[in-house]
Image (cartoon, rainbow, N blue to C red; front, side, top):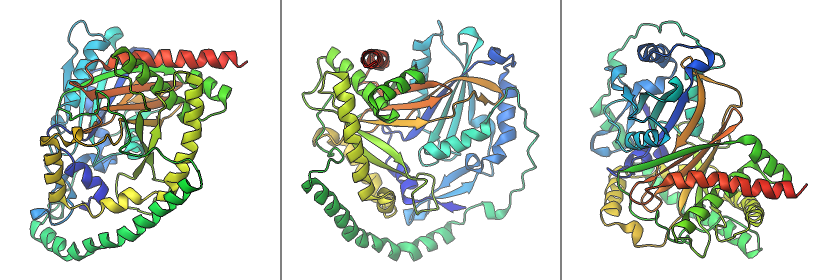
Length: 466
């Protein structure tokens, strides 16, 4: 039994019927590429043989009585693999449009908190005998780094690997939570919550450091609550729309080298160009720049040893108000330097430290009121969307024995920020995953198509540099 950290638990507290805080990934498997024979039962059995290597996939959330403290992870003694792995056929004609719609439907379904917080949906009927797998994990149970670690147990460097049968399970009474003991411990730990008072002067000190930077005319992060309102900055529903596309990583590296910037600068510029094109086509392009919330992993810098999520965020200007893509890239690269420096002033654990004092009941009531009264539409926009760029392995991988052709990631969307773009670099490609509230962005495929126009414009400019 292990208690969730405040940050991990916050993903449970902030979830509503419409603000679903799980993350998804779409894996396109290509069994014929290496002559491996796909069979659903065999795939599921291979997954079962590996689960004992990933204890987090066998544990569920247990609430502390009266929410006196953050919930705990406990072993699911009644674990049943059939409740987590489902089989579907792709509707005719079985193309990318039908696959995107099906992934959106899967992403729109809440997870059962009485079970371990993950699902896998195996989708058959793709062209060329390919198979899709949609994996879902709740954000309380996984972040980018821990998700990659979990995938490492499910992937191999060669096809057809079969693990031996797992050891026999041996559950004991200690695997079952004792509610009385948990309640008593929650009461004992309550005085520690007063530590939030000590966070105030620490926070004021950090804010003071940021003010000093600005007075010295040093560039910093974009300011939250200053973003322009767009069609996707409203209250969200449960429905999701999804799109995905792939671009060669070599093109991004060529642009990076031509203009002496970072890969992340190019990725942000490409997405900014796609957003600018999409909003222009809908006659919704604001006069001022969109602002993105960009998650930053703190696994290597955090002082905290416990917890799944070790992440912070910085706010980035996308300069969508700048027409010239090269000028936009230059401005983004310069702004990112200052944003990272200012982010370091806040510290790697700023978000995690505050979240530790999150009161469960207060958070739940507040987020439901925020949703019900559509408060996201009544105050200035905090940020327009979330953009995440995740580095992945640059060699072929085989998921449960079968070659991965593409891997498209999809993060959560929030009230007031109903669009998420997550990018994964893997095996020489960049896989872009777009997910949005369907009522706010019914056509994310047009954003995905615009990615290639954005890359082409930057490549043309890079070639002109020669």
